[in-house]
Figure 1 (tube, rainbow, N blue to C red):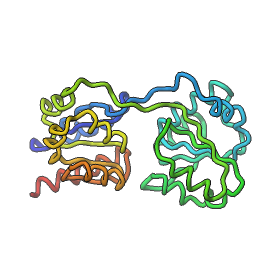
Figure 2 (figure 1 turned 180 degrees about the vertical axis):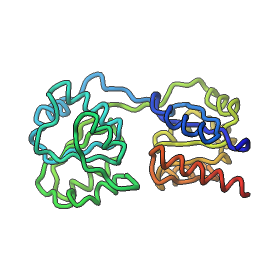
Figure 3 (figure 1 turned 45 degrees about the horizontal axis):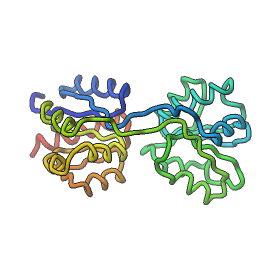
Length: 258
């Protein structure tokens, strides 16, 4: 247990405590440094306001994350009493479905690995020609869900309800924290978090960090990490706490056996 590495959890502010506590209970020193800041939009775009006003016109609504549930439901409830009847709601995974349940909304959750591809494989989203569909998400991000569903004939609208941005840290601040904390394992929750890590590090600081093991939530992000020069990249099944913890134990056991 004493040889276990110090772990950096990079989830957004307010979302790291459970994972840090679970790591500590397993004998790891866990530190939190968000690599992504989430902010509600000061004002929703007119198209988003129109989508909420005419929510009854949609046959399907997809929430792509727990954050989409939090910000999206706040936006929806600011304009109406709740979700209208007759709409099929989808969640990217179990934790997103649980977040929806807190608002009294039942949903169909995608199976592991809980990705856009998992959602797209659901039987209910195969024959959607001519049907109106709303994707609740943050500003920007990947467009694969929208693109594929549009190809299937769905009439797809986006409901962007929050923005993501890189934390503001002074030059050298992140590298200093990693050094002071003696971080021996990085947990990266998203591709954007990885990009922000590289933004906050100088090229030389990135090179110095390249041999530190990194756990990522998907093969797509693993490729990004490998292209950035990281030499020990481990791919968890998804970004959930359970999947990350499982891969932490796996990567540590491999290190101990070397």
